[in-house]
Image (cartoon, rainbow, N blue to C red):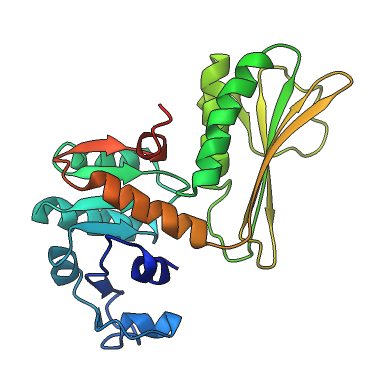
Length: 251
C-alpha cells in the first residue's frame, strides 16, 4: 500500500525499498507488488536504502524499527513510524532519536482515526461524570500485539481528558467473579479473527443511554496516504517528535 500510494502521490518519489536479509524479494522491482515497474529494486542493505532517501517510512516490528531508526539518526534522515507494540524503553529510544532528527510517531496514520481522537477529547470532557468507558477493537488473525496501538491511544486520550493515568486505570481482561465495575476504570476488549483490517469503538455507557464513537477501516490505504502526508510534514524540519495530530494541525 505504501508503494502504491507513493507512486500516485504528487510531490513524493519512491527512492528505495528494503527487506530483511535473506528475503526472496531481493533484486526484484518494488513495484512488482502493485503491478507497476518503478525501477526501484528491493535491497537487503538497509543503510544504503535509507541513505538514498529523505525520509524513512517504517511499519514493521519494534526491534526492526529501532534498528532502522538508529540508521536514520546516524544518516540524518527523517522518519515516519507507524509500528506499534513498543515498550517504555523503545518509546524512550524514539524520543532520543527525535532530539537529532525529525520523527512522526503515531499509532495510526489514518486521517479519519486522528479525527476520532479529537472527537474523543470533546466527548470525554462532556461525559466526564456518570459514564463508564470501554474500548473495543478488532483486527485480523495475524496481528501480534494487543490491544492495538490505536486502542491504547484512544484510552490515553480519554484518560488524559478525565484526569486519569491509563497505566493505573486500564482493565485489559475480565474473567470470573470480578465484582462491580469501578467507575474510574477504562476497559479494553480485543477481538482477533479473519481479515479484519481494523475496527475501533469507544463506548461511553451511562444510565439509560450509550454513546459510541467508531472508526472502521476498509483497507490499509488510509494508513499509507497518512504516512506520506506525515513525510511531507517533516520535509525541511531539523528535529523534533511529532504525531499525526501535529501533522493535521489538530493541536
